[in-house]
Image (cartoon, rainbow, N blue to C red):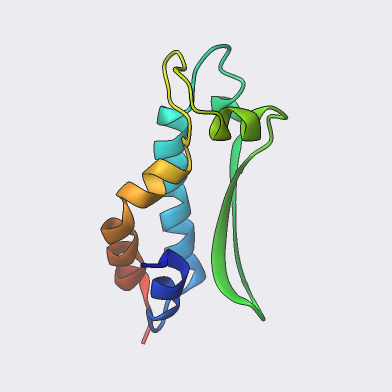
Length: 105
């Protein structure tokens, strides 16, 4: 099941709902990011939008080494690799529920 395709099926989804989902996933990602110096955990951001493409949210990390840590499978102190991807996968139903709760008809 493709998450983006399923989200597009939710009628009335809006920026407020996407922002709420973004905050939820961002918070869970911060908790799961490896903590060595705290820089990685402190470098998370989110941006929600509502434009001609529709509505959406981007969760990203500005630490230069974040992609490396996210994609390299190994043991990390105080965290894990795939620290953004795993919370998204594990929260699918909660994501849909949140978007439906904020949906306008």
